[in-house]
Amino acid sequence: MDVELQILKHLARDAQPTVAIVDEYCAEYKDLFKEVRNYECFKYLHLGIISPIKRKSLPEIAKVVSINSAQSLHHFIAYSDWSANKLKSRRLNKLKKALNGQAITVVIDETGDRKKGKKTDYVARQYLGSVGKIDNGIVSVNAYGVYENITFPLSFKVFKPKGTLKSEDKYKTKIELASEIITELINEGFNIELVLADSLYGESSEFIKKMNEYELAYVVAISL
Image: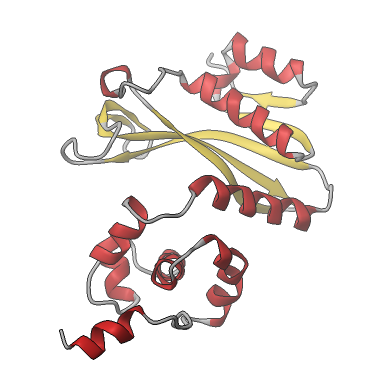
């Protein structure tokens, strides 16, 4: 590459625009990214997520947002210097501000996605709700908020099967992960009026005890 082009590549510049709604939303997170290229990838991912493509993989998102390679998106997620926790905290604060103290319903559920191979952390043969059977994949416990028929994501935690744990990991059941999510949402200041969950949680005395501890109303399923 020409020396002049190399210099221009690293000069300070504004992020490339995408579409108005994505640019407006992502602008409130701009200060969390030190490099403009990381901020651009952040916007490209949002643009890809709301696009009509069926498979939201990095290569497919790269195609639909018209960037040359998915490598930059992969680098942004895997290696770039930005904090997922700070990003999550900013997003939850935005939600709290929008809700302005109004009560919400929290829905607890788990999601399983099929994965080939074992390159992705915490992939194992386990029950995947998306395919309705045991298969190779990754599972997360998720919390969604509901307010006046509007559903929005709150938080999630990856379930880590015992055979996939790293040295720094501690095994936690899905019940424990769900309980942690509820605790974190309460500590964040969300006003929860009702918790909904399926029989995995409804038949857990540990989970019910946690609901009672926080004096939360709940509706849970049980098997017959």
